[in-house]
Length: 256
Image 1 (cartoon, rainbow, N blue to C red):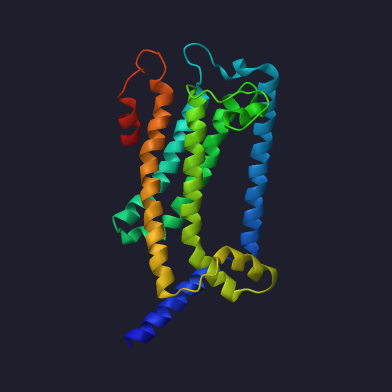
Image 2 (image 1 turned 60 degrees about the vertical axis):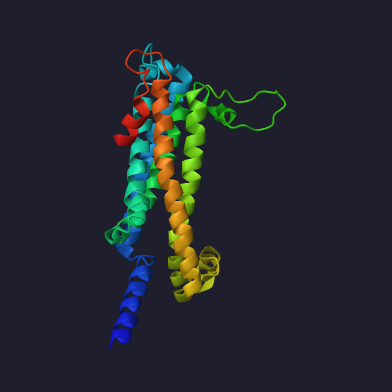
């Protein structure tokens, strides 16, 4: 029967969703092994950063006219990675490409991780990185305000905006899955996922609202791909270095 086959298919999808939240012993070892490797890498990076703070930015090879060097290159790379994830998830959703569903979640997660990684490099570029919060416009007793002519300010606003919208886009897609785990778990795990699911029950009205909100966020994220990559390109275009001071950089970065 068609109705029975649909029920079986939905039950199989539900089982697949719940299986991703249950780990085997091998999965736990793989997870903590990855955490250990990441911690080791972060420890080495932290020691090198301390050396940079102690010795100054000259250890990175920064000089005139190459003022940002490796940091700006890595920053642009990770912003590009973030935008590729958005392209796979948001833009293909707007074009109703159904094959995106198998990789959309991974692409959205990749976007968030890439944006957080990109945000590290402008902070590393600061000579006094512990004062990074000066990039944020906030009331203070010094009467100072941010310098909107600085590319660092542009990057801070672009990264913050893109990160917030990307997290909302990612979280919204997870709400139905959180509800599945909520209904199949118990104890503390059930309480956590009950809050994350936001009372989702899977009614037709909720799905209509979900698709409407998801489409709006997909359109906003798609627009941010163009605007954020244009702002990143102005880090170069606003300079007076020959070959950089050009209006072609914004469309060049977006197309690239």
